Length: 371
Picture 1 (cartoon, rainbow, N blue to C red):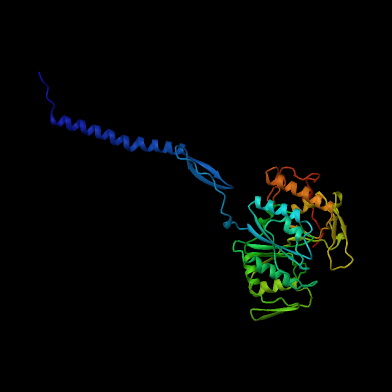
Picture 2: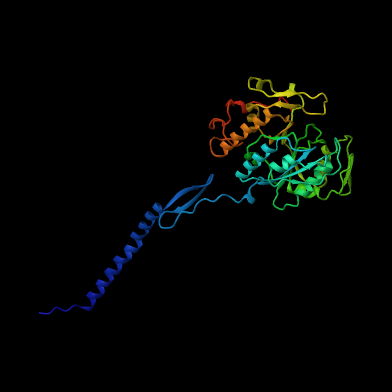
């Protein structure tokens, strides 16, 4: 006997099947999706302190790319402006330091001015890309015209973000990380007096400051007129006054922060440093000349490297000092290669110092009792 299936039975079967399918979609699939998502998304650290989510699976995880140098808050392209009488004493050491900066993604474009008008053969043969500017008239305590000429020449380079000055007796004493302490908007001068009317010529100028210098037509000795306002000073050293006047006239941001270490009286050096191999210093007879470092030592150079200073002045041009600088630069090279922490952001408990014979706690001492 053949059984017949009623229409009502078929409809009931379809309804039950549809209900079960709907229940599956509403309950099971969302739970499965959440479980898969918890396994597929993991926190991945990119760079320093930046977290992102990356999916694990067929899609490749993108590699962290270094930030654009143009977006850094510190300068990565600087002009180095040498002011010399005849030639540069430590040209070979400067060459090595500039290359070290290049390896650290800091571009240094060097310029030089010779007061005697002589070709700076030692510097030109050692430092690649060095640009010698035409000699302008200058004399002792009046080299603002020289500084202005160098700045105007360097300002033609659109990529430069600032400039630093160095004399023939200056030497580098810093790791490239020191440039992180500079600011793209604020120039750094050293104001030794409380009234803030006199600043050291060994300074850092921003690109905006360099552009303002281009508007200065002349650099008179005892005063200047800027944007309709006259600025005068009693001192004959125009280079120590005109730049602060320029900052005021053009409303440029400046800060009181020394760039170059100078010693004006050896007796003022911190006595706590005497336990180290302290350098030999010759006091000048005239009060208006800084002391001369006749013998550099590794602890002293290392102490400067841990400080805020970029350059050291004034260093006697002898073979012993050149050898000390070479050893110091060797340590910086090892630091840049990852041998140890040498930058200003290193913690106090960082790995031991790269430099030979350098006490581990030297950088905790102050260089001078007062400045």
